[in-house]
Image 1 (spheres, one colour):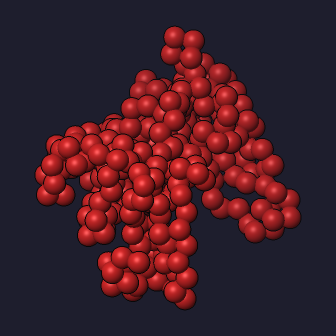
Image 2 (cartoon, rainbow, N blue to C red):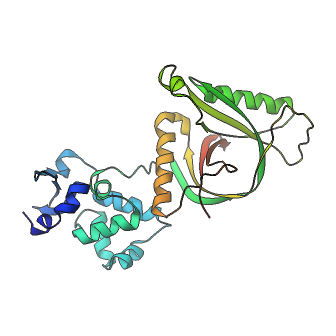
Image 3 (cartoon, rainbow, N blue to C red):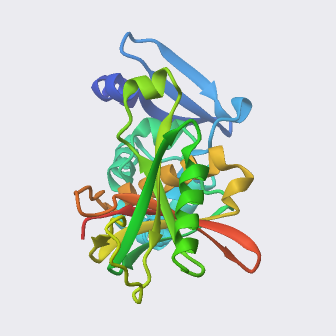
Length: 279
């Protein structure tokens, strides 16, 4: 066994992933568990995720970082980065740990897990400044609150002659454990962005104002083809984008911490997912 592996059992005990080596042109992961058990698995045989694909995914997430940029940070050549990304060579332990520090991930994630949720459905991850806006909302807690909340807020917009209303929505967290565990309910808030020229004196309408705010944003193409996988994974991908670029999630009372907006363009449906970040 390589002495490098034995010298880092303290790291192995915490991260479970110790070292990558090559044997007869096949890629092997060596896992070292706290009780000294060593397990080797051939990634090519069990079809685990490629380290190279994970690295390429993380690099592209970091503000369009090039292979040259990453090579400079790692103190290696661009050709070395290229070899890492096609799995024809692997970094030494020190470099692997440096990659984890740079991309805010663990060795276990980098080497073993499928971090590449970069589906073709996901496009245009970016930071966007959302200008101040006013909105009114409607909250539903039920077994399937999304449709009910959106229908209600659209009907409200129609009743006030608001044409082509801009609708946003987000999960409503104030649900009891009994509602969740016994009745399998959850909450959802749908809101209508109020046009600038909209004026009402009705006391029945709660108008909420939000100031300008920076958001990390991801666009999902045709989100309802597989909503139970595409939408949750979009949030995970966007949060990974935030981690890689050192963006902190902003959660304060007067700002929507996250929301989603559905729209159509050229006959194709899209959803933009927004997560508030600190400036």
